[in-house]
Structures are given as C-alpha cells and as structure tokens.
Image: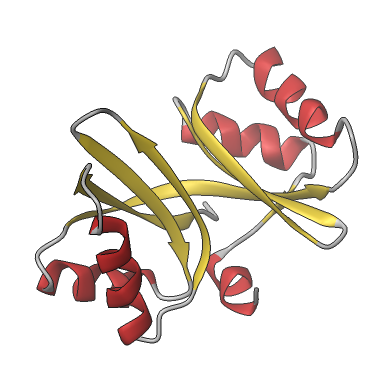
Length: 142
C-alpha cells in the first residue's frame, strides 16, 4: 500500500506556537511540502507533509510537542477545473467518506492529501481508476 506519512501536532491555540514548530523544523533543516491547520477555541491540529517525517517527529518530540505520525493518501491530478470532482465521484460511488483533505498546486498538477474512513477500499478505487499515487520518495523531490 503506497501511502505517505503525515505529522499531526496538537498545539495550544495561542500566539507563537506555530512559529515554534516552524522554527524547530527549520533548525533541523526539514523542508515542509504542505500544511493545514484545523482549530477550536482552545487548541489546533497542525498537519504537515515533510521530506523527513521520522526526523521531524523526533525533533518535535524532543522539543516537547505532542506529535503523531498518520498514514494518508496523496494523489496527483491535473490542475484543471473538475479534476478533483472526477476523483471524488469515484470515491462517492464506493461510499467512501473523506475524513479530511487538503491540496496544493504544483505547476500543471495538483497534489491532494486525504484520509478516508476505509484506506484499503480507497486504494482499490485508486488502483482500478489508475489515479496517480504520490509516495514519500516523490515528496522528497518536491
């Protein structure tokens, strides 16, 4: 199963905490490919795709951050109107739910990072439709 590892960091929702994470990763020469933040009034979840997930996780834990590694799926699709809808149509047809998703553009391609309620079934849909998976080696090249 070709997935990538995402770092999830639980942060208090107060000024400077995001900067601390970013400075920590910068000091470790760990490049961030993508990130998203979901928050409540008291805390946030920072999700990151980085070139070195193990190194980032270890470094952040050493600095006292609450960190988890999570398996997620990354796909490359055409950066054209309707491309994401075509992928989601196939997932919906199989009754797959998306727990969360974020994306970024990379030239003529868009990279989609997602987590579903059934990773095995999602991988079957991806394989049967010949969607382009992104692996951790691909992430290191971005």
